[in-house]
Image (cartoon, rainbow, N blue to C red; front, side):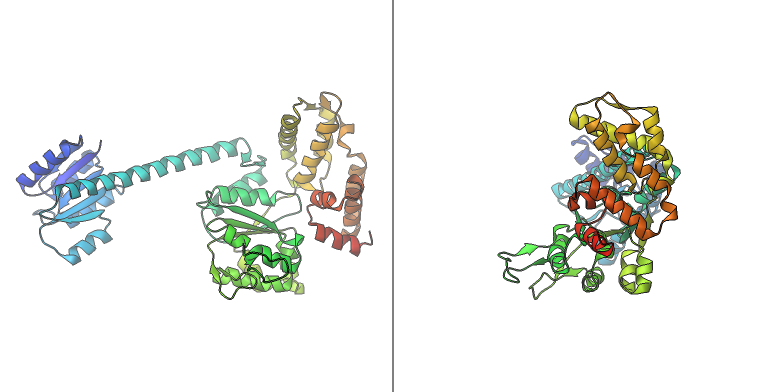
Length: 448
């Protein structure tokens, strides 16, 4: 049971309250004034203090102030025979749990003590869960993981630290980095470590929709607002209420949609298509792009005010070629993942691992994963050899990329992706980290 400290200058009240709460199994100590009570608290903490307000030699209000300074988690219930609204207000400002007037109903006082103890129990439970979560995160980082993110290089340790920091605030985050660096994984990790973790995480690729469809997806629509709108439908901002919405490829958003998104971020309200009224939303926004939004602001293709709204906290993810020490660990992780799915037990040979570590990985972690998925499926022995990786031609091309223009590099990568997936644009776009729409635009641009 609980440790109660009863403080009252009347002996009869101390005796009465001792008898009242000892019957419930609580441990009771008593003091005749605040000064004596503080001496007792320094020797042993208490869960709840039940104190009179008016006492000689340090009254209840001074005791409340001193007790909360010494033991911030102690709960204090004040008693007084003099109904004084100002005194009660001061007590609550100092952190008193509750206030009762003498003479009081015994059951009411016992109920107030029970509620104070319940509050303490909830706080301790939350502290224990937080300590457990902190220990779990620390253990994951020591093993080179955080959620589904793998890597223990210095660059990744910095990413983990940033994830843990921004998870505790509500500001908008902009995650930048090349395609395939794991931007959505980072967004999910931020959400999962945040106070919003038990609420929805909703993801949308802004480059995969036309302007009209994107507006309907994000904000919802009303029945009859357009052909095919046969019922009201919530948008993703509403679906992610009290949770997180991840806006991937935000740089692909049209100018008109940028204006509408800016208004949502400013007003925290959305207007469904065809609606007259706005709906308040409490949704954290995490955006991502593989494009240089600052350069797009300069050339006028991305709004400057929206840029500053979405990049309150910027995060840049390193490409895989800049954290080569993580490749072996990533390789083991992906091989284990796809072996578990196929029921096989396969290792990787030393020459094959050296090839993985020497390749430049223009498609980053996503390309590494797809390469190893294919290798596990196609390997005919118990060990992946360098020939199973299919990186020979790509590797020689990668070594010459620095001599090529950006357009030439993109053309090579798009051609190879289309060849690999026999012209399937959806699969090629996924491998390249692009939306189908973005890939089609690049194919048209390069005459493919």
